[in-house]
Length: 182
Image (tube, rainbow, N blue to C red; front, side):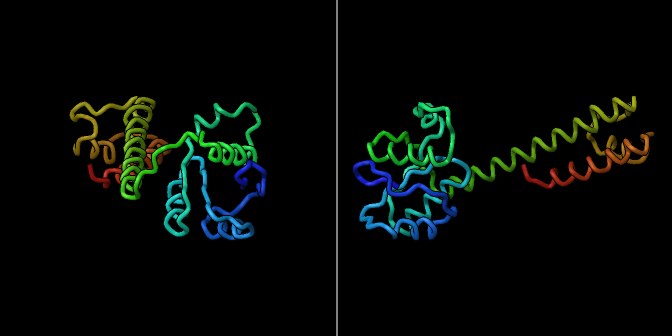
């Protein structure tokens, strides 16, 4: 926390909540509160909370630009907080857009779906590529991942006990991921 002249009033760790920040700021006679938060996972939710509940002017700082502006290789939370406060105070804070809540929720959903799709692909590669190749097995009458091929894999493929265990756990993951729409 800096005053208008850039004098350090406070620089300490704090719980990541609006009420905790309010308790710290209430120790000072702050008429106008401007807050800078480095953009990262969850920072937009905190920014919304501070703006909506307390009416504070909140800016999300672009982490890449801020790190390049910093001249010291020393990366500490206290040093970063001081830099953000000073950049905000003088009007040089590189800001990012604070997406509305519904956009952040859609992004979260898309990110989660992409992670599930990657897990599904990795599972298929683990079974179809590595596991069956190591066991030198091939179904000669069905294309991979069709119902007939999966039936062959479960009931007729001559897998070792360990390979069967890997296949079963991988299939459980694959079936779980298949439940995801799209």
